[in-house]
Length: 267
Length: 247
Image 1 (tube, one colour):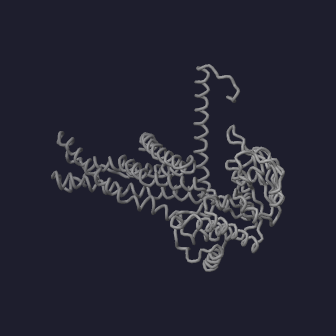
Image 2: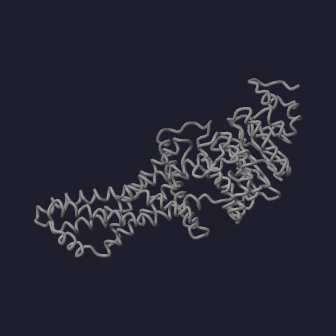
Image 3: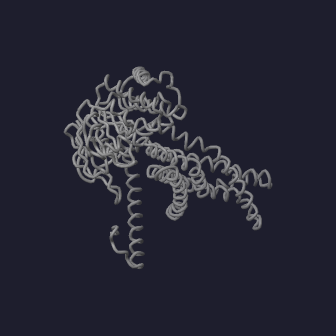
């Protein structure tokens, strides 16, 4: 305890005290974070589900991110096509361009890049929107109307993340493979048969499922982090700005950490 | 109707409420006055169950809501209408949808009847034809009136108003006060209002409670408050920089 009249502690003890306080704060935050998700999951199971809000969130997270997903997917595939072709041509193995591009996209780059892009576009907006609702007492207004804010503001985005992330990742993968085809086949002279034929040989269902599980879990992680940060933002415009930055940074780090973890677990 | 018993609340090491006792009778307009930052809004948030006291209790019609959570607390809140300081209108919805929202979410009324009640509510607050506007497109005074319409559209038994006239010009202040009084005469709800609009609130309050330094220092009818011998009350209602001696 550091009461107003308490004598100041020696430096080593103050350091230990500070470390202890930070540890306690971190554990408490983690607990709140977990409890928030448990509540959201519980409200998914307990009706009524706000279907209108869910459709609106699918539109917001999914449909409105489509242009940026198409654009980044195409250029990621084109860059991959170009660079991998250059590397493979050193070994005379250009025929494996199709499998190399598609496996890199389906297993790794598609889910990760798509999740990072949607975090930047929709995740940040989600945090800012909920944060502003909090500081302008709109969340309190829902509460005193005896309407559960979690049901309106947390459950629909998390469910929308589950639906939209795998779909957008699939679109990203297909467009990326198309981008690789443009560069490898149309610009660098590989045959269409070789590009797609070898792809069929090397890409199997387990690769597609690896990408699917990653996209699904990223969808939950991004929406969970972004809604949580919105609900727990600080005061004023500065609080919302800080929460939005934290949401994007934490989501991005968790995407990469979880990607590595899944990469070691999934076949 | 509402009883607050020895309520204490601190934020960190900062005590805000230091043993609040307050009774509000059914059907009366109780106005809580006091200096800015004195804990009036914090007290109001205890009454509507948004904050829990560190000690003491809040009793609504014989039910202690201090320990209530979830559905039990929601059943009490079903009887409430709340006007927040900034209006707290949903900015993603039109004025009409804001007023219709509690009816759509909390009742099974057909769409036609909801539309009728919303139009009637907007008419009561003098906002006919403004339903399609977005909250961002209307003035501060209009937003307050929309907030009042939204709070009253469900015909609540108790209405809480947190500084409903702050930041408005004197004419709008009187307009809103007149509106609250008019609606109170029609619906006979119990009203608890936080305000520091002196002397306007003396015209609409049945009783006034003065909150100072986390405690209620005086409660009574408006004329009794104005004649109070308490120098803190006199200083506040005269807006004096130094204490005003009573008498």
